[in-house]
Image 1 (cartoon, helix red, strand yellow):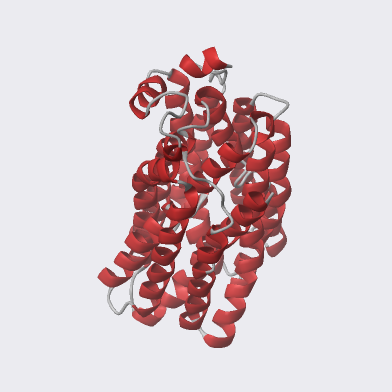
Image 2 (image 1 turned 90 degrees about the horizontal axis):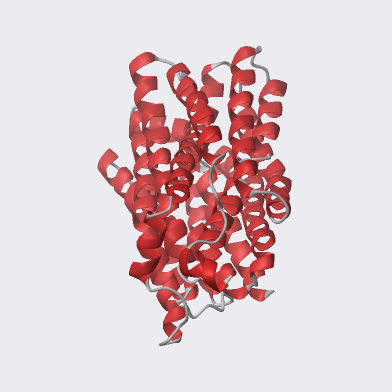
Length: 393
């Protein structure tokens, strides 16, 4: 239980901080005199590096235990936020948020924490505990967005970033509650070797389809999380509207993530994933089809919130079910890489296409098309155990 509580609080802080970054786009760009592409590039690089490094940080967590990796990651994360706050040039900003925060996210979020959960709880409880962890990330989004906006309004974006850096540093003491020594503490740990696990995963069509579908999730989450407040300001709404919408996404995803964990233990997870991606596309179509008001934006946030991070416990649960938990952080990190490549394009294209066309219309159309693709590719995935894990099961 201590592992679940500490891991959930860690996700509350690390994911909640990340979801506040969209609030800083306009004030920081205006104060520095930068175009939105600078902030968009920093957010895009953060997500790309987060994804590229995730298989390696996951492998380290599997081998040496999640607690040690979390300590190092928290220090890097906090340093990146400080660098983001003090950057005087676009290069320093991109290095701070793109490189340091990206590495910090890689070592303090889903794959590392969920790997520890997988090794501390029996298989029949995996969907539920992963759902609880994802819900905790949504609690952070719901709680920290109003906090960040309040500090920005009261003291400015610089002070707000310093407060977020302190919250990131709190992950260090929390990591001591993550009891997970990794399989490296057992010289003859049962199960497949690393190379065998990779060969089994790469030989499975379902693994690649799951990875392809996760690209959509990353693209949509990063685009909306980074650019949605600015999109609303451009359409005549207020910063408070954007903050409330993003906070509602977090609030409703508390129920959505918990519900995904509960449903994932009773129904095919891949069918649930298809339903989530389809609902996102329909929500975006509705947002663009009707007059944009505060209430329509709030309704969009509520609908989107039910599936916002609900894809994470379901996707990780499919990986655990197919391949076991020994290399869960590494294998789920490989799938998550696709998510973050999608996040890179969602963050960067949002800024680039806005600067080029003066609107976000093209990016919204891409997001809808990706929803259709993800809905279709998840349906044929067979999530039953494979290889040696199938024999053991």
